[in-house]
Length: 237
Image (tube, rainbow, N blue to C red):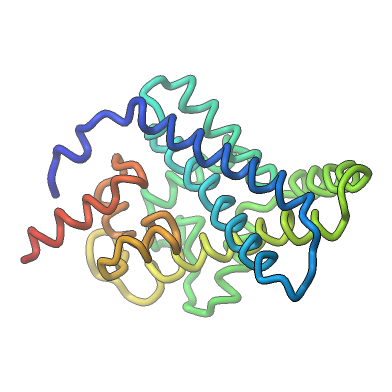
């Protein structure tokens, strides 16, 4: 792996990319919440997919903050991590932070909160969700929904605000946890990796299909993981 990748400063690009994702999420949501829904309109389904992808981007940004990769300014880095985690259905950064670092420290063991000793997708997903969804999130989402529906169409709130959030958890789980860690992986990170295809890797999960690379270089922000993949491909011939 090219050490120049990990030594490169994330400033100011990390903050700018984080702000871009936040602005795109807000802008898209504002537009879609006022969009006339017709089930024969393909733009409705495209809107759900776009919003799902932007939700995933919020979580990936919070994830990078947990590794100190949004900004070298610790207070700013943490603030952006807190904010993007809250936007992702009221996740709490203080709860996510220790669990994610346990995942890195104890990957694919009984002490790994993201791991399940089964390759059963549904059992693993249910276990994954139990680790992170709290009653406070449910209550806050319910309260926000009931307030917002006083001003916005209920159907739009469900289709463009709530549904993409749920689908995003499936996207994150499937491409960022289930595929990389299922089965027996005897390498040092107990992880597999997606075949090199940078466009597909971005679309599916912001390059986190390159999961071995993330565990091998946790100091690399998501938007540079493709470079780690390139570097390792060259090293492996």
